Length: 260
Image 1 (cartoon, rainbow, N blue to C red):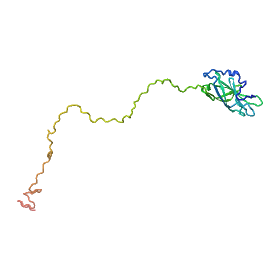
Image 2 (cartoon, one colour; image 1 turned 60 degrees about the vertical axis):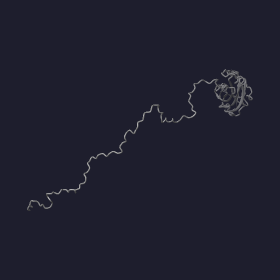
Image 3 (tube, helix red, strand yellow; image 1 turned 90 degrees about the vertical axis):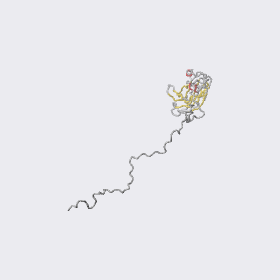
Image 4 (cartoon, one colour; image 1 turned 180 degrees about the vertical axis):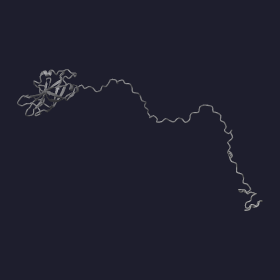
């Protein structure tokens, strides 16, 4: 059984110097020597169960260089223990990994190994924050669950979003638009009703009274028909006119009346 107190150096076959030496990788991030890295062990998920009857009691061990920490034991944590413990590491130039090992605490026998893994520091060193879950493996390389860490690095060099240029970049000036202090008139003024008289000599005026005035009235046109004759002083003749030779009635002629 491993009797390790919290935040004490650890000695374990799974924290060997060979595994640590392989993590010395020179990355693009430099100048981290002596800076502080905060690591919070949140908990584990889907852990391999090493107990047959009761629930297992997991705890987590961290190693970075010569610094080793362990969390408290989560009694009856089973496959999903919760820790919420924070540790601080002094960074080493060129060391970009933290080794993590999860154990099951036993009372009468040695503690059971559950799984181990390596936590990469490239993201937290470049961005200042990383909460990625990390996978754990058994001794034979099989999946043993995952551990959840939250890491903070306050000296991360974040790329500046904007830069103040020493001189404004040259750009063609935009087309100028005439600005008026008063709005332009909506309608144009009407044209002048009269034009100036050109300097030509005036023509002589002629008298209008030289012509005779027109006649006041014209005579009526002649009628196409002759006028009727004036009334006669004599009485009108009867029709048919009386014959002076044959008077009406019995004819007193020269001849005798014929016998009938």
